[in-house]
Image (cartoon, rainbow, N blue to C red; front, side, top):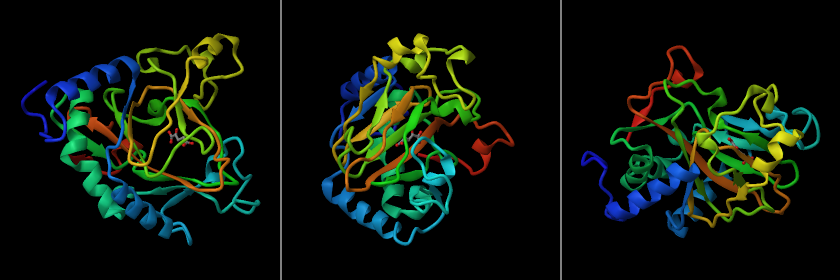
Length: 264
Ligand SMILES: O=C(O)CCC(=O)C(=O)O
């Protein structure tokens, strides 16, 4: 690890290096208890305040058309938000979290670079998985719609409360960030086809990533992941940001280049 990396007093170089090895092998890594309960509770209260009424910009479940989503904005549940967008510019507490030295140290370790940038163009949101009208997100790699010089981005998922299979926690398929998939194994929207016999062995190795409030999940942009609906009575809130190395630039003119990266 280079000496130019951000310094965190919270973890030793040996801990960061050990975590990075897990990430490189598995394509994801959980950092338990990353944020204090008081931080998560205050942020969750602020987020809830932005949900009723919904303060834009936001994406609605009806916008994505995923399985279980309301048919359109006029259908029952059509006003169910899926994500509050532009989380970095709207929540001061998240700016501190997303560009702080503790997270920077982990990102530098797993990305093997001292120069990390936050992308304002992808994720940069608080996922708001609501009871009642949330949808199913099928198996996909986030990079499928992103345009960077190298498909080597990392996303950070901060649970603001418990995430379980019941409330729609993410599931990942370990090691898939190192695999390539023939186009026939994916559907037109580039979701992994769960109806194909050829994909069954892989899907059988999936793991649900259950998190407690304050836990952070790091995952590679090529790691296959999916999530179910929220079948509980409480909204699930998770802040999500995506990072790239400073020398891994978005392609000019693409959606990935719409807003400048924020150097850590
Ligand atoms: O929470 C979910 O439904 C999945 C979110 C997800 O996979 C994504 O935004 O890439």
